[in-house]
Each structure stands twice: as C-alpha cells, then as structure tokens.
Length: 168
Image (tube, rainbow, N blue to C red; front, side):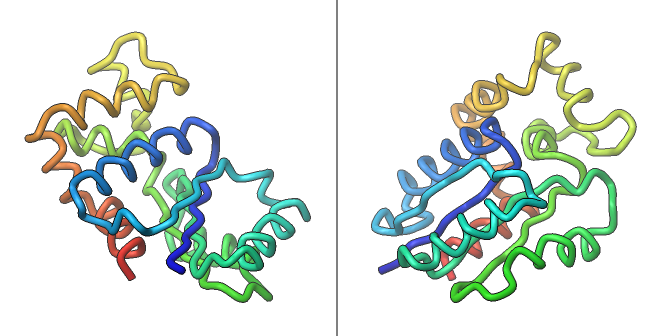
C-alpha cells in the first residue's frame, strides 16, 4: 500500500498542506489512491514524537515527510537536527525545510520577495492587512482559485520537492 504521513509544525500548516494535497489529487498530479495522513507535529524534542513516528511505520507508512520552518538557518543543519527523530524507523524520513516559514509559499505564488526582514508572515500582511496565522489556509484559497498563482506556486522549489516526495 502507498501510505505517506506528513508532519507540519502546527495545525495551521496541517490545514495548508491538506488543501494542497486535495488540489494535487484533483489534478491527478499525485495518485488519488495514495493514502496521505497529515499531522501537526508534537513537540519536537519529546519522546511522544518518536512514538508517533514509530507508530506510523508500524501502521504501514512507507515514508514520513516533515515540513519545517528554517527560520533563516542553514538548511543542512536544520535537516540534520530533524533526522535524529528518524533513527531506528523502519520507513523513510524526508525533511523539507522552508527557508524561513511556510508563508513563503504564498509569497512565491504572488511573485513577492521572500526574505528574513521582514519575515514572510509579516510580508504577507502587505497583501492581506489583517493576516493572522490561523488564516493561512484561507489565504491559500486565493492561490488555489487563481490559475496563474497556482501555476507559479507549482514552480516553487519547496512545492516541487513535496510533489517529488509524494510521487516517489
């Protein structure tokens, strides 16, 4: 069976990725038969995360994907820190590191600059003045409903990395 578990940093990221997965399946970019479960990550430095990951493998997941914020840190160092959670797993662990935070996906779709100052969540307020993190999936709808923005998002390196991992 083709089962994949995705873990995001919080519930807002979970909703965001869920909407993207739905669109990718609707477009048949990924197989509809692929079973994808999406979770908000428990505290990363806890034994609970290790137990949850092991359980995913036991339940038949062939791959676990973490989507984490890099907060401007070196991507390789962030990956190395996260890979510790995969020690002893019987399934593959892949880490996708956003350069700063997940809001950069939206900025890319809007053809906006992505940088640390201001960070993407602050820059997003220039497009959506009342933006708060809990509105992330609603803001994503403006991309999903605009074919030009959606096509631009599909060119974003982190988006393409996710699609590659879901297909492999």
